[in-house]
Length: 317
Image (tube, rainbow, N blue to C red; front, side, top):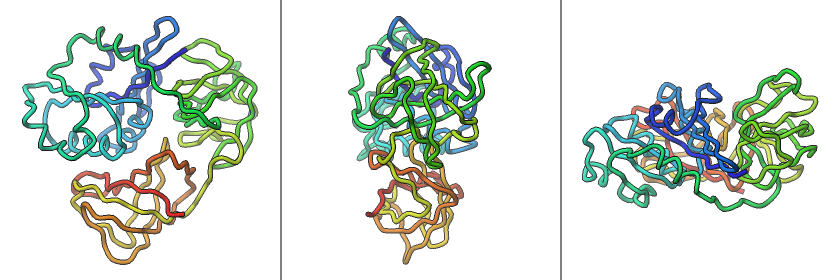
């Protein structure tokens, strides 16, 4: 089965027209299945109260639809997040928003290459077009980012997530990071259908053996041994967003987002960094982070007077 994963921002009404409401927490998933193809739409329902649902929903989406019906702090923060994470997608202008209002804002960002539409159009046509997408497979060792886990009667612990890379198979042994605990995939479901394996880009429900939901909560990664690392402190090369209004200084408490992780940590650095600048910092994490060279680390400061998204970072080896 092929699944198209979409992040839809600023219109839960449109999401409800594209699919049926499924898993609901600070992120809500809407699903539609037709034969061997499916659409899953992630909506950050607790945003802007919390920043993390926005970043998690963007991570889940192969592409993004952002509905712009006004220009304010929230829309600005969504645009910054999409740019920092290098997403591809579509801007839909509503409520008499004009193209000449948007172009100066997205100039010199990755959103310059996005499609821009005036009005939503027919949601049924949109759904069919989205389900025809064929994302390129991401080969390599199995990697699954978990976003929800719970107990199901008769199955035990079930974890929901995205197959980021490789293939997950029934009866496969996987490692739970960051704990390092091992478990066996007892069964796999995709949109309520039992399958023997699922490839990259698939949204899956995995019944796991001999673990509890709290052992494999959001932010955990299921993978093969020896391919990902875990750290409790990092040296990072940080690139500050041109839209950030504050100053990065020693002692600030940041939140690092990578995959479905959102981990706080305290900065050690000399000097200061401002919008558009690049520099090196050390971060002592309040916990552990699973590191994958293919994921963008999004750096956030929740006390910011403007966008809470500070910029992006890569670990210094």
